[in-house]
Image 1 (cartoon, one colour):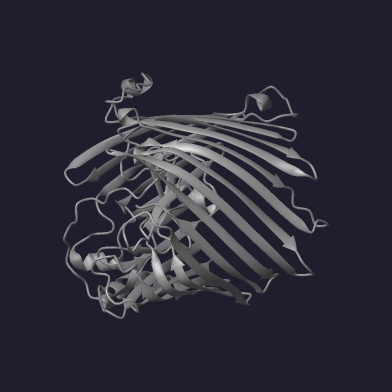
Image 2 (cartoon, rainbow, N blue to C red):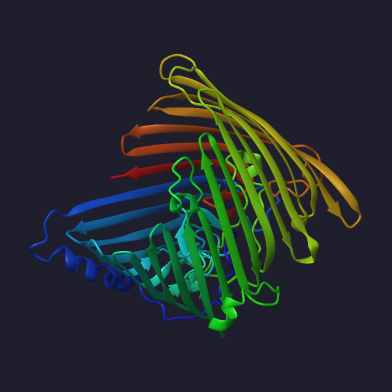
Length: 530
């Protein structure tokens, strides 16, 4: 789902970077200097991105074409005994000196043992399946914020206190803190945008009864001028295991949530669109080489800013399908997803998926996906796959969309391999004055050397008049060509160089979608782990 709209910007006193750093570091330093702590361990990672280039020339107020941008993110963690502490530092600067920033964007201290965990500072959490609350981050993703223009790592965290405990079959979670919408960098704080604002407090209790798990969650949120009380209950069980059947598995999960209702209201399982509610149910059947899954959703007035319900849309690894997926609208959406997979041992796997979602005003998203992919085998010198997808998304006026593609990898000699990815998409968009058709082509070729690196050439051609990468309006074919060199500098350091033109638009990672800005130039990314 997309990042929720941020709460109303709020002003707060500005602290100097030195004071902010001191207030963050002193409790961590005090713990680190405490005598008697054995076996301390330090770990960390660093992500650096440098760009020489800019948006396409048609973008207003974009600055010079040879703009320079530098972003760096370092994560440090220090563990000693049952105590764990860490922080994330981010900085972004550019040749225009527009909205530069440098500061600590997350910090935490945690204590845990076999049955208890307490974390103070920034944390991630989920209650149930995320119907009423989910805080998360997207590792490795760096977004280019349009205003104030700056690069940052999206993180929908909570700044507060998290406590987990378990007593045998019972597990509880308590949390309180200020949530973040994940839409703003530290640069926004200088303009009065508070990254963590409001208050979210609640918890969850779940118990395991035989082979079933039953639980309930509660959350109270305060944002802007409003307050909401949210409650959900969930049940997970496997009837096949209950009956002692070992030849198959049939896990089933169901969860229902309401907002601003009483306990009696929750038991009514109301699904009226005017009653804030969320219903999710899923079942899986695993027997032999066959796998089947079915999921249902019914969401009404449940875009809360702190939650992330399952979207029930397949997340594709294919480029053209990934950028044209459906974005959940939890204000009103009812739908389902069915998927089946059958594996032919030593040969191939077959996958079929049918997803459908109906939103307000009778607008429908629908997708039918089919894939045939060969099994990976050590004695086989090639791998291949093919897919076909038909769909429509009336929420964005797409009445017909057909996509097909082929992927293949051939191991040439020893550690050398070559890969090819060819995809084509044809779509029709409905407009007030009629309809328009457009086509996307994607071609990628890669040569790789195992444990050393790879080199790729990527070509995209589109006739979509609304493509964000366009410089000149119209439907003339737009060609975007880029190259990627990926090198393993050492066991802990990886460098990725992109040069050319990158297409803008939607991208999705781990079920969350975000907007990628188009780019022309060169970009160097270096990832280090230690």
